[in-house]
Length: 329
Image 1: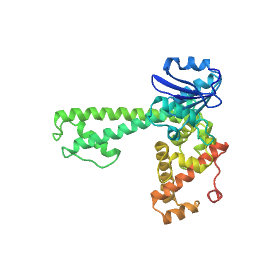
Image 2: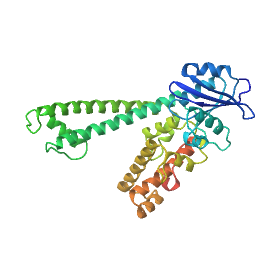
Image 3: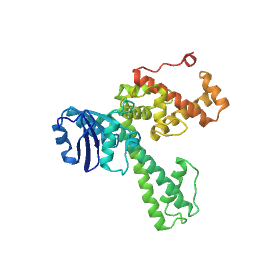
C-alpha cells in the first residue's frame, strides 16, 4: 500500500474499481470497493495521483479525495477510451484510467465547485421544463387538430386553443377530450410559472457574480448565457486559446461539444443580427460585409464563434468588455 503512486478509479453507483501502480508502473492494487468504503480506503493511502473519468458524480469524488490530500485529475471519457484493452469491463476501465492520467499530452477537466454544479442544475432543470412545455403545447395542438380546430403558431395561438377548451358551449370538442385537454392546459400553466421562477433565480444568481456581470456586457450575451458559462467553465485557462474554447462548445462544422451552450450562443448571435438588420450595422463593418455575402444562419455561426472567443479572453484574463473602435466611433 505504501508504494502506490498512481491510481485509476472507475466510479459507479455501487461498486467502484481501483487500479493502483507504483513508481515503476508495476501493479500494486487491483480490487473492487463498495461505495461506502471508498473514502476509508483512500484515507489509508499516502498522497498519490488519482485519475477519474469526468462524469455526473466525478466532481463530487474529486473534491472528496482532494480533501484527503490526493492529487485528482478528471479526464474526458473519449480521451481514456484509446487506452482500454480488449474485454472491456470495470477492471480494464480502471487500468486504462490509470494509464491515461500519466500521459503528458492528456487533457484534463477542472473540478467544479458545489456552487457551479448548483448553477448547472438550475439551468438544466429550466431547460427540461422548457422542453416539456414545448411537448405539452404540441400535444394540445395535435389533439385539437383531430377535431378540426387549429390556430396560428405562437403564444396567442395556444391561448386561443385553450379558450376553446375552456368554453363548455363549444360542441366541437367532446366532453372526454375536453377534460384531457383541460388537464394539459393546467399543466402548461404550471410549467410556465415554474420557468418564470427559474428565470428569477438565474437573474438573482447572475447579479451576485462579478464574472457573470462582466460577460453580460458583450453583445449577444445575456444573463442566461453568462450564468451558464460561469457554471460550466471551471477553469478557462485550461483552454489554450479562444479557438479551442469555441471548438469545445461546438461552434464548428462537426457540432461536437456542449449543445446547450451552443444553442445559447447561436440565439445571442441571431439577436445581434436581427438588431443590426433593423437599426443598421454601420458600426460593425465586418458584420455588414459578412451578411452581404453569406446567409443569415452562416453569419450567425461566424458571429457566435467571435463572441465565444471574446468570452474566453475575458474569462481567462479577468478583463472587461471593450467596444471595438468602429463600434465606439
